[in-house]
Image (cartoon, rainbow, N blue to C red; front, side, top):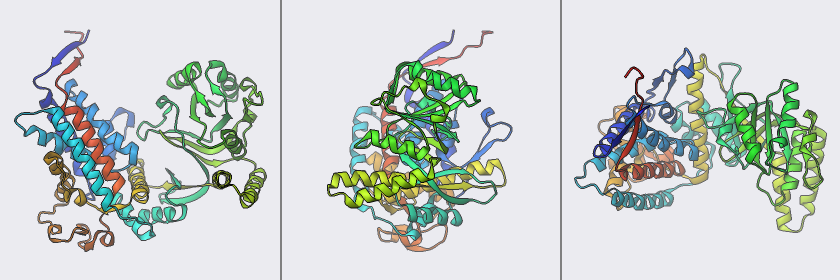
Length: 510
């Protein structure tokens, strides 16, 4: 039986120690200094992982002491939540969290609830100021500069900016592996669905929190799947053909049906990834369109179709299916080209003839889905280790550009945060930490930006000074807001914790 320890008086000391151990390892990777961390774990095989991606290091970070490791699991959420929201800014968020905790540790009479309220009030003030400072960007050159902040590679930044200048902020980009050592891009047919996986147990890539199937078979229905019998017949037919993977797009999957999918996945017998019907004014029509695009039969409850009679030939096909928490992407749907073209022509005609604005918008949304494109960036590298590291950096750059298009940008390198003030002295001091860490990482001892106007700065890498957009020192507002909010949220949890219940494994010899 394991030993249970009750910790009370030393709780905050354990919090401070755990935060510092974790963030001190990660923060040298912040900025363009190109510092990396080597991760050696059994799951990565004989070759260790060498990365400078904050969220990946956070996911793998662990301490031997059970009490400290419990705190690490809480801290990790700062990076993970920031990454889930905006896909970037994780290291900056952790640096702010560490600064908050260390500032709180300096207080003599620590009132966690009062400080938490102060931090949250200060965050709202910082958020409002950042939104008021935001500058909208659209030019290809500005998009390239944003990409360069996350990944200092001009060729890749050019590639990403070129893609977004074509597909716009609502376009979809997926990251894959190149067959060569070159990083290239391609535009393929694709469908974006505004629904993610129904259960996190369906995730196939824990590092990126994604569920993915290559060359999937797709079942499309408006049924609510509740019984094991809704899934088992088609699963058995697939297994007979040596296929053990299935995508299900349905109204809902729950109860015994969901349990069947999850248990089979956990036992590595069969992988089912289920997502709900996309949002639309007419879900039946949307599902019918998806069936046409993928070459599937639409199993309609209204028409009395029976899922138990579904055959493998009734399933749709695609090159790839990726499901995330809040969205999914069908890459390269394999429907009949002639049927798809007829659908597109009919939709164009209907749009031209529509007089009702609501009807016209619905038709335009359908046309957009039927003609959708997905950009695929295929990352190449001489070694698998470098490939993994590059994929993380490319993904960060893609997410940074997407965030910049969504929310606008402000002066980067942490300088916008460093120049802001709020009613919380602790938060005002803490949000300046990323800028200080970046200067330390780059060996900058005498920053000149203090003498520059608010929208001007110095690019430490190129040595050029001027307006932040011109010299390429940029941060997406959405990323900064997400990072500060996550840091404040987790800091509030930690500073209002007054005790711990810690389970220590006991050696059987004892």
